[in-house]
Image (tube, rainbow, N blue to C red; front, side, top):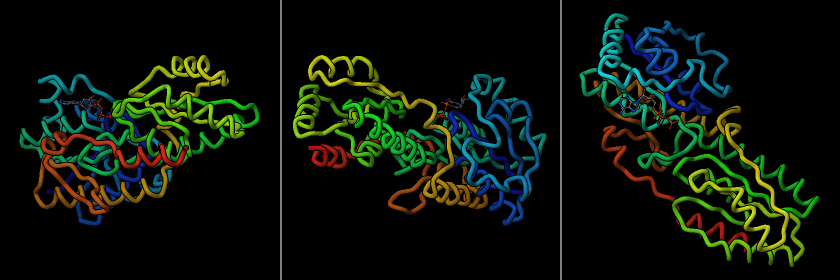
Length: 319
Ligand code: ATP
């Protein structure tokens, strides 16, 4: 293996730059050439790539987003687009590829590997929705962004004696809601994995008010949705003024936390090592603080499970 490529694909996440930096610098350290491919698989099939050197990834470890840009490419999913991508890799003399993205991007990486082109996936998504790894790059930053927002909402809610519904991202996964709710001291957390009971939520709000509590935070995961309906219901049942804040894309940006940068750096380096070991069609991740790698298909078959113990703890701590 003489030359590898790196791309970011799907939704961006804070820490992707730290992963790119790690891939590029590890590759150079191991005497490989590296190209940075722009705009995910779309840039790949268009041949939109540049040689990377040590300086290309200088001063990016602390930046959110991705210097390579990201995209969703329908063309890559067609047979013609896919063949075009393989041809481009051949023309540019690229022997291996590192794909930083979510499960969709991993399917693309798997397809490339199955057709004989060595590809390794790095989990870059704020959602933490991949069952094979404890954490994905960007999750910790997104949680911290929500926790900071909860702090701000507490100040203003206390002044007015309001309750706040905060809708957070995560698609079908409740991890952002769970972690930010626990760290932010939320009264209730509503996630798609566990049924919620409106009576219980309202009872807690009323007993909080009766003991002089001036603010309440309820986190609702995107996968549950309907934050305005939930707010109306609370308003109706408790007479507590309830406001809604949708965190939205604010969660996707910002300076990556140290934890995300460390994870990205470790996973980036491992992905290059795997290519040099002759591996393909694998994804890297972290389990109990150990860097692991699995076959892509195997990894994607592992269901993501919510930590029920943590969910119960949020209930205990918000009595
Ligand atoms: P996020 O978790 O942020 O949504 P993702 O990687 O899951 O990220 P997708 O939009 O699902 O995002 O996938 C990104 C790109 O990967 C797609 O636009 C497409 O080009 C490619 N891709 C997705 N699924 C497949 C597949 N089954 N085969 C080949 N390529 C795929």
